[in-house]
Length: 196
Image (cartoon, rainbow, N blue to C red):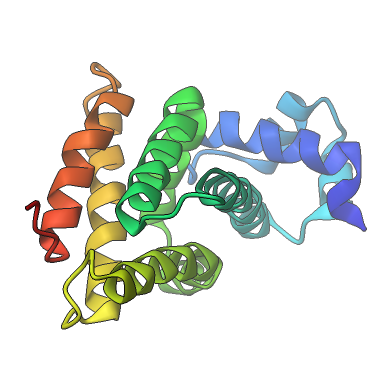
């Protein structure tokens, strides 16, 4: 399996840096190869083209994010707590790696329609995690049982995503992690949670 080979990971990590620093359109495969310390031709043993590198790095990094979220929410009983842990994990991982934050929030957005469709495909696993939290909250009575699950899922992902984008656009001038509790508060109230 190519994904487990050290050079695959080397190329992915190099691509994150090169794309974050130069922008996707200016990130030539030769620059990625140089950053990874491999020959240009080596890249094509692992990836079809630059677009394939971008999709693969998004798959890789989002996979890590989803895995971390699932591990961190395991054992949490309430849906509101799971939601807080999800938001905190998302913000923590992206604030620890500014290059990946720039790539996911800015560079992936500038891509063509085909690329965006592939990106949406990769996002599905994350949206499933959010959906489970919403359904758990509806079943436990923490969230309104009249929620439109798809709409709630979009609202949650959209809010978290836009909060990170704003942080990136502001050159990381403030703590992203400090935004987790206020964002969580907005989300649980948006889901019809009432503090008694």
